[in-house]
Image 1 (cartoon, rainbow, N blue to C red):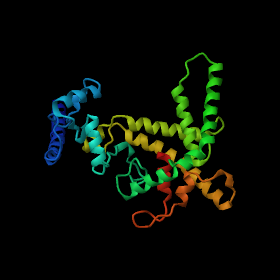
Image 2: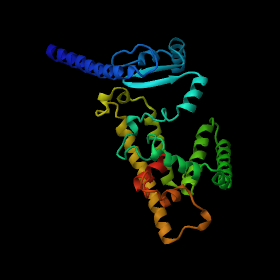
Image 3: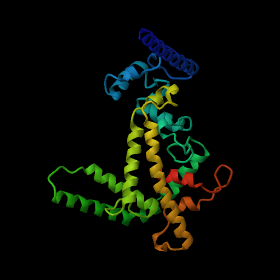
Length: 307
């Protein structure tokens, strides 16, 4: 029994030493090019500097000591903190390309790769192409004007539902949830030309549920993001649980996509419905060099889901 305890303690010490060595090696390589910051602890980095009070208070206190640009290590994850609007304006105006990369959390690294959505793609030709599509096909003035009647319909429906709920109940009404449902239906019309949440539309409700679960798991602190050696073990099971809901949500999007392809083949879709974002993705034709000639079904699935 004593031998087992001694073995476990030795294993824990060896693991902590190895993790600290990896973090220290990475820190030494980066220290010459990073802004100042508080002293790093082995394995945990600067997490202990943030754990005793709300993060914005901790960061404000640390910024007074280390300046408006400082480096924090969350485990082995290097984070640059900008704490004044003047420095933020300078950085994002004159150094926007250098800061365009993003940290992709383990929960979002699934079986579909990182190339796809504007959220999980790193800055480059693919990301710029997706951003251009969003700018020209979703957020342009003509598309927003064309959606005016749909927005009004969604708002009227939301108000009617709130009135009905308030007339037959005494409990407080969660207005935030109704706004979330409103936005979900609005985006559904933009993407698929249909309300996704209706009382008799089970598939839309399932999609809403799985999307909500993915957001919930993706927002949870995951120790595998801070200690790289733990990535393959997924100790909290966050990545595994997230991917289960991703698979279900992608299956629903795949059904929407197949139905649209079939409707276009059979020419059964009304011309009055106009072109939505799914049509744009299905009809996309790139240059075949920096852009794909056509989007694969996987990329369309990822783009639609994340959007």
